[in-house]
Image (cartoon, rainbow over all chains, first blue to last red; front, side):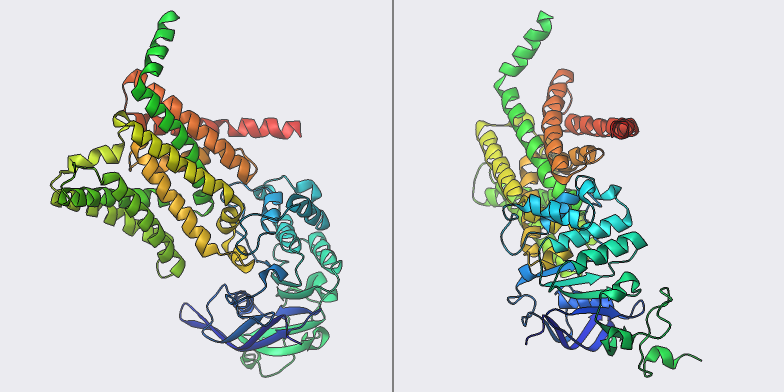
Length: 248
Length: 289
């Protein structure tokens, strides 16, 4: 079966530096996969390359078997960025941000019933009372949930999230994972450097280190035994990682 | 009291004032619609860059017109329109190619536009003084045809700016997300740049190329102080733009001031007032909650 998201021998260079090297991953329908690793290991770049947001130096990127720019069914994909500039310039209500999530392709306006669907998506992340509030007036965690609602309103088959827990309090994090658990059959690729409540949701982990995939398997197997210390980034079980080589 | 009425009726029955008022209100209302997208894209100065390039267009039009034996300045406005649109699209392409940052690309436009205009106008047999009318506006020389052109262009700007509002909003507010949703963000960015260029050439007659961007940006700066949604910011900014356009024009007529500058000074004063009164406004709003 065609993986929903796949990279093959992917190399990405940014600003003259090699950020990803020979990165290979495949996420199949129904999987919930965590993309793990320390800061600067290339996790965010990998998902950006998957989505066609950064140029690929060599190798291949495929979503639903298609290369970005060549017939990817974008209506089935949703992305939750780590940070969004939405609402940072002109005041923007949470509802407007989520409604814009229903756009896809050349159609310049959201489909019929977009407002209702957007309101429901906000309710699903526990923000029904904040729909008309300007994004700038929301807390970091609430803003993250708005971005999640904007992705979920698309009713995607594939959800790609970049550090959805950054700056999110425990209650918000729980609510976020609960909203995901309610979506049966969703395929999910999540960049994380701290698992939090995602530990119960993810089935598989892929560990990146210095731009290379160093571990890929069931979540429990790729996590170090001391992974309950959430401030520590999860470390791979393989012993040949460059990071471990420099340890005394 | 009757003196006032007479004064008003004399002013309003002057066809020149009627034309100027019509253009000031229409342009004042349409410009902030485009300005809202620019502010969200953090390209508030794009209109200024385009305005500078339009000056080169004016001189180029003048040069071509002289070569064709036309009346001096006959092709100045068409030249400005073409240069503005080309300049806007080029800056968008330069910006999106990532080789040059947006503000550097803008800076190059500022310098190139003014220098090109000043050099070319000499070649065309004019003087720098020729350009002053374009730099500071010339509402007093509006013809019926100018008004018609202004109405049509402003209508076009409003039609595209409102019909494409969701896609323009999505591309302006979070380009990465929009791209990852399959939106042709490059296309919509070029559309918003082209809308800015058209607005510049329409508004050029009202306030001049040097102040042209103020009509797009200042009303948005005012309303974003208290509005809570994108569309309300845009709607109120359009209203503020139309009202300050009209009020500024009337004030300039009464006090014999240059209309473009009066409109902009009035808008900036309104901004200062709104910024000062904002804490009071916020307190009233939160006490009502």
